[in-house]
Length: 117
Image (tube, rainbow, N blue to C red; front, side, top):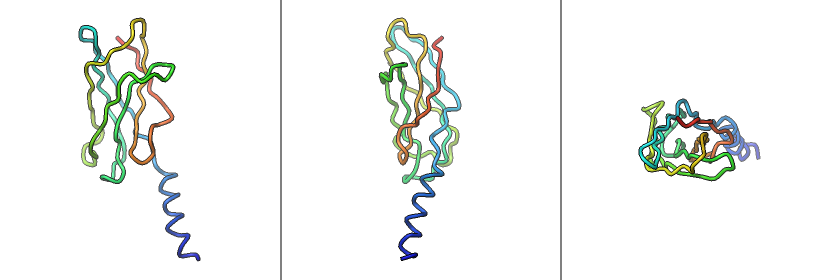
């Protein structure tokens, strides 16, 4: 019975130690009627089984303006920056929130506040 529980405990311990991708920098720039977002993430990617797989821009009420999907791990490129252009931000909005995602743990609970220039 003990041999059966050890692998199960290892899985739970690994999940408990997992960290959400950290947003180390976020910038926004306006081009005409749309915005470009550049977001830098730091995450202990281990390969295809565990990596930061995206970020999104949200309004204060949780409305998602855009989602940037990251299609592969960045094991040897940490931290790394990816961009998303052509994002429409409603008139009057001066602050957005960036939320990161990990393929194992899903969307992070915390967000990074970004004041629009």
